[in-house]
Length: 481
Image (cartoon, rainbow, N blue to C red; front, top):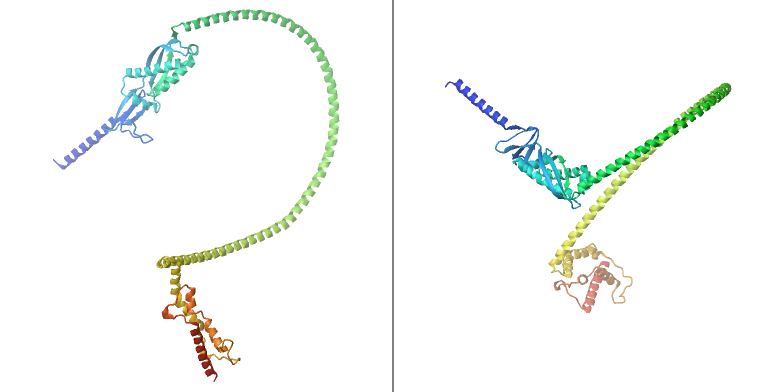
């Protein structure tokens, strides 16, 4: 097969596939007639609350039916006539009555109610729908009749039909129906109560008619007599009114002439007075205009002077206020900056002091832990650690004193009260001014180790002092020589 023929076959196949697809799509696009409701069921989406929808109802439109996933059916909107022959219904007066009636219902196209019809009536036959509606109507009719008197049902048919329509339609909406019409043909009762009410009403109507005829005859006779009396009175009143009218006309003519002459005189007087008043008013207006012009001129000059002085003063005052506000703002900013700097410095020092004290407390806590939890032993450990520094400070106190260069003049020339010379007392005082190591250990609650020395007796101390004093005296005598 040549290449051109293969291409032609391929094009034809593709065209057939496209045409078939279009035909299938068009066959699944369904239009809903105006007298039906198209119910699409299957996978039709979800409600607003997230629950799956059972069906989607369309009235007077069209929709595409997805193959496999969806299907559709129609529900007829043709009205359904239901004959309801209610018998032996018990009224509020415990009287049983028969209420034969005919109801016309149909599937509702109201949103929500139409969904109820799709869920409860789809697929039912017409007789099944009639039976279901008849059961609901029977129950509601008995309920309404049980709450009403026979007089209300028989005489006030509008109230009865309104109650029936309201109750029945509310219940019919639950299955997707709406009430179109209610027609109550007749109402009967077994006891003849309604017939008696009819006879009573007829007798009352006849009596009312006779009474109306008698009253009409009486009103006719009274009306005729009143008409004759009114005629005679009105004729006499008309004659007297005619004479009175003639007299009034003559008096009115005379009064009119007098009023005319009076008005002419008054008009003349007012004209003369008006001329004089207008002349005086013109002069007064001229004087007032001149005075107003002078006052306006003086006010303008005063305003000019005040503007030159007051505006300049206001400008100077505003400049001073602006300068003062700027200076005050700078002072506030400088003070705020200094206060912030001082606060930051003090806060940093406080944080440093807090850190030092925290570290010291932590170190002391570790020393106490090393001393077995005994604070006294911990203090001894700290003093023992600082002993070298303490001794160094003591040595520094007398390090720069050169004993061999000290010259002492003893003016007493002999021993003192305790047998010591003044020179010996001087040197002994210098040495005693330094805290002895033994006392320092005693203050710390410690004992001096034996390898550093031990306490001597008082005699040894005196002898030592004498030896030291002699040696010093000898040294000093050497220096003198």
